[in-house]
Length: 164
Image: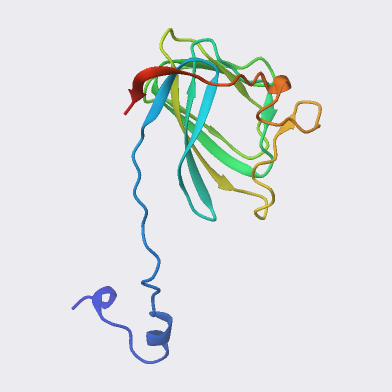
């Protein structure tokens, strides 16, 4: 039998104890589509990672900001968006394309398709797990997500239309 398949013995056996009380969680990607504004639906979360399904109406956008204590990524599931960086960087993205944003990287985006933009946003703590919700404006000041400065608009839902 190969060594990696043998059960540990002696002092190694104590290290092999596992916690079987930790269970997986299951989820479905489903969110109501929008005619205006944006929505943010929690999908799944642990102490170290979180996933959100975000929907932006056509033309919806946010402003240049960074999350100094969170690495995160977006994957476009429907629609199209253009992502922008602080030095004039510009990258259009479509279905099944994404962007990885290390903690502290500044960006903003705009929904550019006629159909609503649906994004899967996955984040994890960085910098010793400090406040992962912290959002900074380009001047270094705070930028609340649901603020006029961040171009937030309340969602206007389409009746009986969902991404799923």
